[in-house]
Image 1: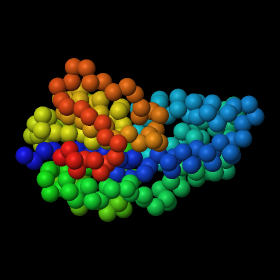
Image 2: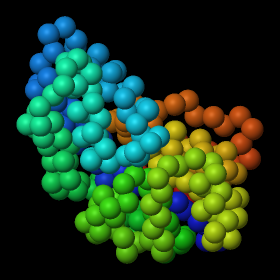
Image 3: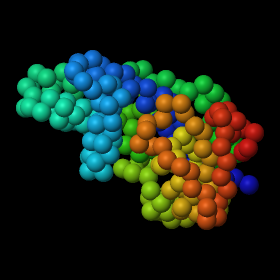
Image 4: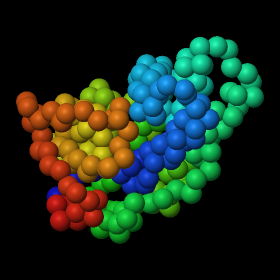
Length: 229
């Protein structure tokens, strides 16, 4: 039986958050705050991103905007155009990094493609996400690519309904409890959690299986999908 496998992209198929972390490290060095530790600066930025992501979404450009806002908040003064450009540059250089495919992904996708219907299901800035999909060399494994602004239960239900897919035969596979596992289960789908050590803190939350009708399990590596599907 061919199943419908929805597969996340960032930090599931390729590395992503490590580049944002490196940009943040550059930002902390530039800020050189006299009293706050990097962890405390990160907490401030997390609060800003938590609010702004609901309005502006995700991606390197929005990350740059958040860094500028964080800098201005912590400096408690208007910042110059030169400062803003320097800070924004930390984020924009993320897109200049070569895409690093996670070990085992291409051969696992090739295996799954022969047996199931694969959908690349990712959220973020459409232009940036499409660029990464095209650069990855993985697009040909997928019969469908969908880029959404946010991943919640309603979005999953719409994705299923628009293609007349049965949630009982559909699985979401990804590294984020918040965006991949919990909303998919809430939408009546099945879910596979593949943790990534560097998952963004705002994508972490307790996995909620109580009341879910679908099946859930966790794997340690993307390659292990070959043993399950």
